[in-house]
Picture 1 (cartoon, helix red, strand yellow):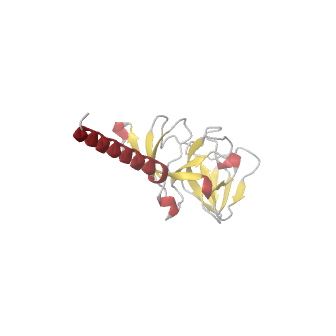
Picture 2 (spheres, helix red, strand yellow):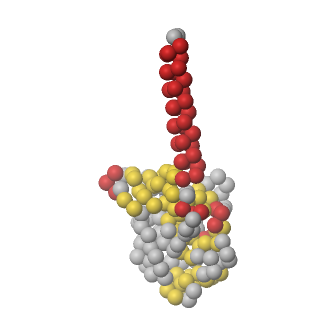
Length: 181
């Protein structure tokens, strides 16, 4: 191999390594993709949907009610859940007569797939501490979503990022639903 070919080969290796390092940095710290598995977010998201997840903005702007987030499952190691933020730090979230209340006011949710939200255990009211969020799936049919109604509020540290864009299936590309107070 001539010296010129060796230098060209080394340039290719450096370029490939730089691209791999850049891709690794983007995936770990900035942006990731995830696949929806299960029906806990029906009718907003469907099993098989592919989403982009913003991992960076959580460090600057935090989260708001209505954000769809990827969380580390508090009840299953090495598992991620996709849920919607319903309650923020300092809020009192309660469920009564099929309605969700935030700080005593009915929270209107146009995206859920049923008229009622039921509790799945004996607890029907949660007061969130600093750094805690209340999350639920959009599918409120009985036993359809394992969420804060079961495992309680989640820590801000368990939120991986904000799911913001569906890129598959191609016929349904677009920003995912966001509900604000």
